[in-house]
Structure formats: C-alpha cells, structure tokens
Figure 1 (cartoon, one colour):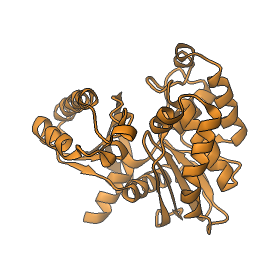
Figure 2 (cartoon, one colour; figure 1 turned 180 degrees about the vertical axis):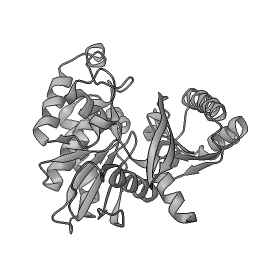
Figure 3 (cartoon, rainbow, N blue to C red; figure 1 turned 90 degrees about the vertical axis):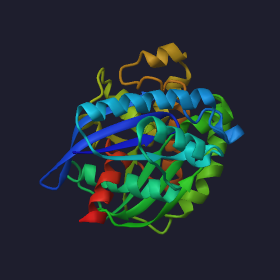
Figure 4 (cartoon, rainbow, N blue to C red; figure 1 turned 120 degrees about the vertical axis):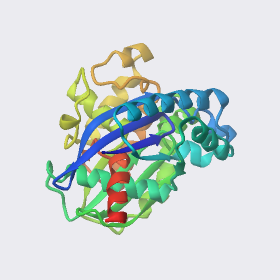
Length: 303
C-alpha cells in the first residue's frame, strides 16, 4: 500500500491506495480542514494556532497509517508552507511529532503531480482529446498545466491565487474578486495559449465541491464526481446563488464540503475567470489529483 498526505492551505488530506493491474485504487481517504494558510498572504508566517491545528490533524493521520500498517508514506506541502518564512520550523515540528519528512513542492512540481493524477484518474471514464489542460484551484495557489492525455507534461505554471487567499483579499466583494482573479490569472493563462484544441480538466476541493453541489450529493461520491462536466453557466449560477446565502445556509446545502462554505465563492470565481480566459465552454471534473499523482510519479521514478 502507498499513502500520500497533502498539507494544503485549507486542509490536510490523506490518500491510501493500492495498485491493481497498473491502476491505483483508493483504500482510504480523509480530509481535515485546518486553514493552515490563514493570514499567510499578509504576514508570510504560519500562525501558531494554524500550525497546532495542522499538527493535530497529522497526528490523527499518523495513527490511521500505523493501524493500517502503511509504511510507504509521502508527505508534501504546498502553497501556504511554500510561501511562509517559518516553513523550516513547521517541518521540523512535524518531523518531531510524526517522524515524517515534509517535502515542500514548488508550484511547478505541484502542477505536474496534479496533472498526472487527474489525467490517469479520468482515463477509464472520459474520452480525452490528445491534448489536455489541468486546472487545479487550491487554497493558496492555482496551477495550470498542459500535456498529452497519456500524462506527458509540456508546459504550465502556478499563480499566487487560491480560494483562501482571494477570500482574504476581497472579503466576498464579487467585483473585486473578479478583478483580482483576472489580473493574477492572465499571465498563467498565457503560458498555455499555444494549446488550441484540448480537454480542460478541473481538480481540487473547489471544483469537486461544485460538482457535488450540482449533483446535490448528501454524501460525497468520488465515482459520480469524476467525469462530471461543468459549464460556465453552471459555475456562475452557483456563484450567484451562494452569494445570496448566509454561511449557515451554504453549509446546509447538499454537496457542500464541511469548512468550505466561507471560501467557496472565491474558488468558483477563479474557476469562472479561468474558463473565460481560456475560452472553454466545458470543464471535466476529476477527484484524482496531486495525492494520486505523487504516488504515480514515485512509482515511475523507481520502476
């Protein structure tokens, strides 16, 4: 068995999987919202409270992995840790409490892993075009990367804009969110403008939550979310609908991921602006992302 832990800006996620006939099958997944990136955009520092929440989540996951006797574990951190001045202190504390070494991914490494996981996760469900572009909206950053439907990466990069970061910058002001998103995403979009005919794949909690909302799922079902298609009209419908609801009303909606109700609008604005700038009228959702991609890439490295 293999496991990946992703220490993200909004949540800490765990994936445990096992290979069968070349396919990585999930055995156990979990997510704990810790909001590690709270305030990082302004202070460039992980707060003590946010780090404590994250240490507790990692300790919980450590117990799960011990109980399941999983030894092949990779722990990665993304935008919030990457952007913080006290990332070494954070990583050292994780090492002391769990024994795990934290690998802080660059924006490009994060994009490449998300690309690999997303493409492989969709192979059996959707007919992909020869060229694909993966949009990964995280809490602190957004990655966009292009390549072949077989998983070979060609170009792309990362923008310092995510659902948590944009929420803190604009505080539910839709017009301001849209202006910031256009400004921050344009340069990223330009990195893949040479790609003309492609399948757009979306990954990350914002996008899987949107699919779950649109499907009105009382319980999240990865097999229904993966392969689900979204249009700009659907994205913008949910932006308008959610903006008119209070946080408790948003949280009560079927399909809303716990702890995401306050940042979901900012995340959806990023999706909407990205689709607009890319000129795409359809996005295919993949539940598989960086977590699975890390394992696939690790396997290829040592095979």
